[in-house]
Length: 360
Image (tube, rainbow, N blue to C red; front, side):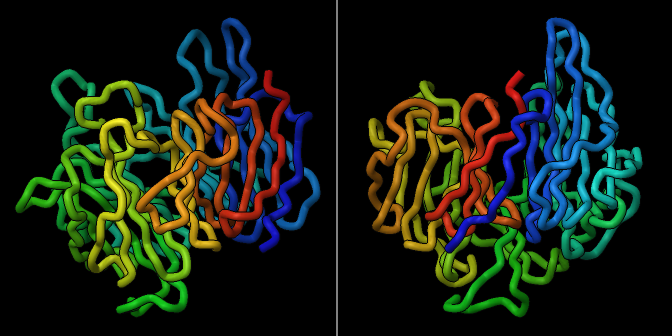
């Protein structure tokens, strides 16, 4: 499958701090140009079918001192995006555009009211409602919905039947061949602890968040982070967290689970074993059209051709391999050190490379 053709923009000032795309090929990119005492932030937009990125007026203030760049970018569909100011203590400030960055509206991450469903194009996000006494860690959270037409936040009326730190775990569009398919094409996932066992569990919604069902992950351990991806009707859940008796990696890969019935039941196909690679995962699991699975880790790229049961070192050698995330346009790969080199693929097999920013 031919990958999307994203134009390079090496002349845009700074290094990219956030990139996201819509399904029609349009997108947004945030940049930061930092000196010794100040970082200037900028925004560029890629319109549908355009052969060049368009710089737009940035709503973001300059960052002074050593605070670093902590903004977040969420694409909400063609021409729509939300920028959040992720500083601590939080300011909750947001900036939303519905016209490709021509105008921005200042808002807040604080929710107003509830909503029964996640609208098409909307996003699920985590909202921490209880932190530890030393403010070091979120102890309990809930799910909020970002409205695609306004960038406003609402509390999802029916929360997943989970406890602890509830986090979005992915949205998949199921294709032909799925056993026990849901009524609609999309399934929303969330992950946290099962109130009955205390172990990590997935919750799935087949009606945009109106109702949820639990789906245990065999052998899942505590304090895990889970992300779900899909290809050809098969779902894979990537379970990450601190590895037992191994603190040499920061993004430990604990297990990979597989489901062929829309996430009703899961089978663990790979689990961490001492000394076995891949030991870590950066970003999402790449489930390619050729049936292979690829993990980008802290010690290179690892590829499986037997459904995740075994892995072999892929191309690229050793060292941090960069990360891959799922976007509505396809898999988006970024380099390891913010140098502005990206790859994009619609099928996980064929990739197109592009450059953003001047790296300064």
